[in-house]
Image 1 (cartoon, one colour):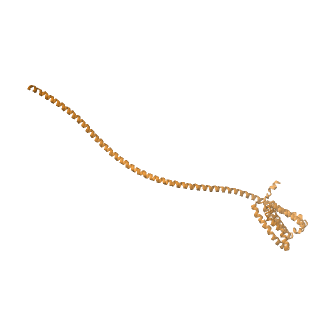
Image 2 (cartoon, helix red, strand yellow; image 1 turned 135 degrees about the vertical axis):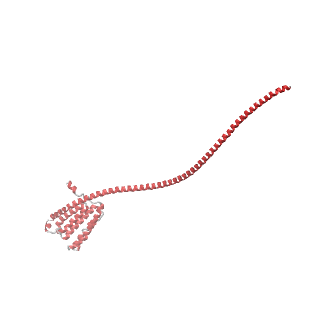
Image 3 (cartoon, helix red, strand yellow; image 1 turned 30 degrees about the vertical axis):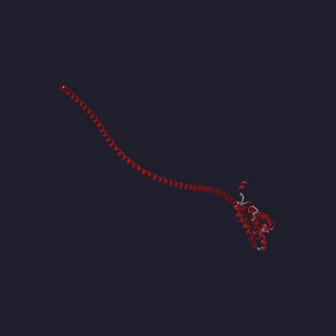
Length: 323
């Protein structure tokens, strides 16, 4: 039993976003059955009053199905009852033609699009009860052959069985549709997650690009400042180099002047040394000459003394003789 139930559609209904346009379609379909019922009645030779009266039975369902007072599930059930009533009116106005019973099959199939057990089973139950009740009290409005007129509940069961058999295929399709929707929702969730991831990565990339742009601008500013600083430094270096060249030239001239001065000084020193040598030599010679003169003077004096002594010695005998 659990396995069987697990294979059935969950029937939880559609989301509000998916339900709204589908319900709008069913409301349009229900409202369109009102003039269609009038035309159908006239087609089968009913009076205009009878056709309008039959069609007026659908107006409460169409009005209530459009009312926001009820929740979505109640509105879906009202649509199911209204379309079931429209199917019954078509069969009734046709005089119970079997061919117009296919209208029930079409409506049941369409109601499966709600993906909700409540309106779907409401339609199935409506078909069974309507066939049975009207088959008993108004058999000609449901059936047009003697066997059904004689056994309305049996033929209601037959019709219900065919409806149920048709519902088997619908339920299988419904479950597969739910599985596809669930897969689509999972895919959508994965895509949303991927989109958020991509969005965050894109935002991160934008932030990174903004940071890189800011860094690039800052780098450009620093490069501009550094270039200007280097230009100023280069200009200052050029000026310093120019001054150094001037100083070097001045130093070379000074060194040349110093070399010339040294050479001149050396020459002067040499001249002074030569002069010194001359002067000192003259002094030495003068001293030697002085010494020689002094020695000659002493010799002269000695010789003079000796001469005087010798004179005195020679003069003394003569003096003595005279005396």
